Length: 303
Image 1 (cartoon, rainbow, N blue to C red):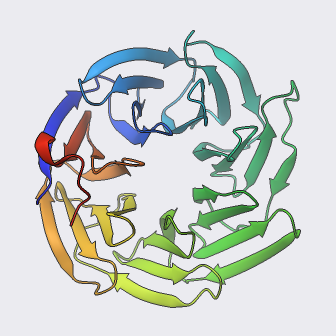
Image 2 (image 1 turned 60 degrees about the horizontal axis):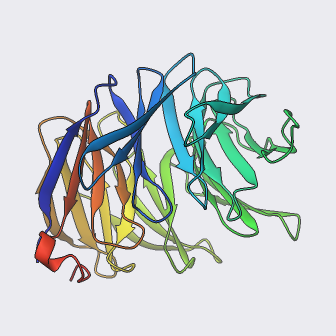
């Protein structure tokens, strides 16, 4: 069964920079060039809350594990920790010397991890009143573009062409150099592989332990945009946005294109697969697009 367009939401916040689901997929966040974050019900298209407090474009956001807090990253060089229900900032964290490009929580949502144009990754203890980063990693030679945070690892990608894995428990750093600027990074659900979107228009599947290149996926248009990718259908399919207003799906093992979804006429640059279901969020210009299986097939998994 193919994916179909379910809903188009005009976010009315300038250009949408990123779309993200909360932990169980019941809500989603859109980050805007209008300096705001909006909280939506993606099933109904209902706007639930608007969060305003940044002084520049919001580039990324993440919801906490119990969905009561949000962290956001902005080009104003700050990270804001928000109370979801009140819509107010709980804490504003300033420490980066450049715009903040990506943000993630750890599994307990006690630490926020941010990546910046100042080439650093910073860890913030958001449950205390401490406003300084508890740890800053300065190994990258260029802008940090994406983060994967697990129980004991922080993995960062950078425009310097390297993926750095910080093992917090062992205090070790492993650096895998791809040699091409990496614009986005995600991890398979089983934690075995990393998927790196690169500026040369190739998405590379990399073994998490050995750093070995396992597969490459091509066919989408990158132009000069940062195009996000994801892993869907229980780690069997790769999906990526594309500059010609489409999303492309590949078979993870075979590497061949299996589907091309026509989303619209503008660049599809950000996407978020539902954490448990088959729906996928896409961002194009000022719109948030919800795609998925027709309602009667929702209980199934994408074939």
